[in-house]
Length: 257
Image (cartoon, rainbow, N blue to C red; front, side, top):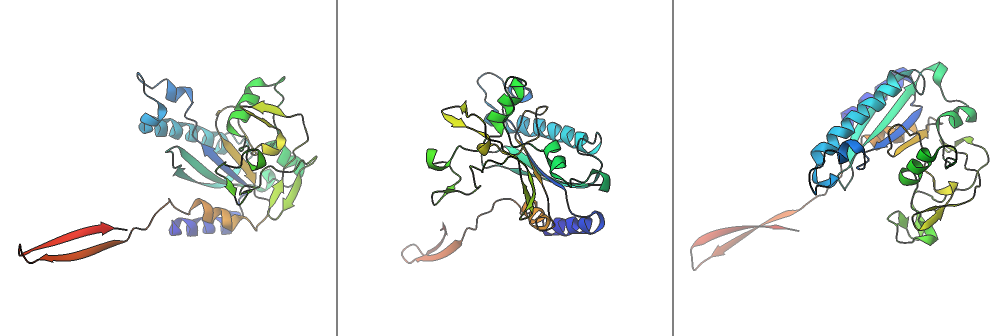
């Protein structure tokens, strides 16, 4: 991982800082996965099918980005695949665009990234996907037991503040437009634009989080983040040497702490 990080820094020296950071997460409810189940099988019973479908979807997403240019011309990109503790794969993707495709203004940001709920009257399918895949929590005072809560506060800083216009650069990241709207019912909670994760989706029906890298302050952290490696735990083994006089035998016992 350290060597990969150094290679990424070499790419930055040649092509410049990354412009977009995407997180693409597998959706176990994809029809390609559900249609492959047999009998009473559930997606978690077939991780082989999950990773195969995710790999195909990821290749299609990368083809849309790099060949079809949905963000513009891509000079360089890297991606790293990780697995959640539930077993679902997700990919972190960093894109570097050419000078003509750079995201420089708030209008450019609003063109590619949204942090608002779609209008269900004009696009019901997109509204359903966003409310299912791109809503954080809810957490905070309405759900203090949500996993993101630390000392009574959300570690992801949700709910965000309402914002009429996008701000281009605040500590290395933009603050996306989140206009005040009427709350909508999602499950047992009422949510509004303050709970929406920045998104780009409809074709893939999955969690696709998009962040604009607005400053050189953020890119080193991002590359270290994607190359942090898998979760690991240290285990100390202690070997106990026991001698049983009455049997004249030696017994080695491995104990884990």
